Length: 72
Image (cartoon, rainbow, N blue to C red; front, side):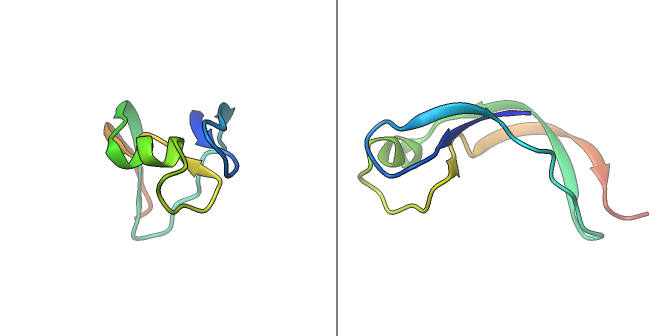
């Protein structure tokens, strides 16, 4: 999956990167993201005017569908 990452401190240091699929635990679900949005906190991180610890994936407001559940 691709993600927009702020990879280092500094203004506008972002890059589209391939992100590995996460493993899920027994009490977690995996969501297939269908749409994502940028909000104010993402813009503050982009402009380096908000505390963050890189790397940070931008666009954390999302909508999606259940891909699979960790419960077996």
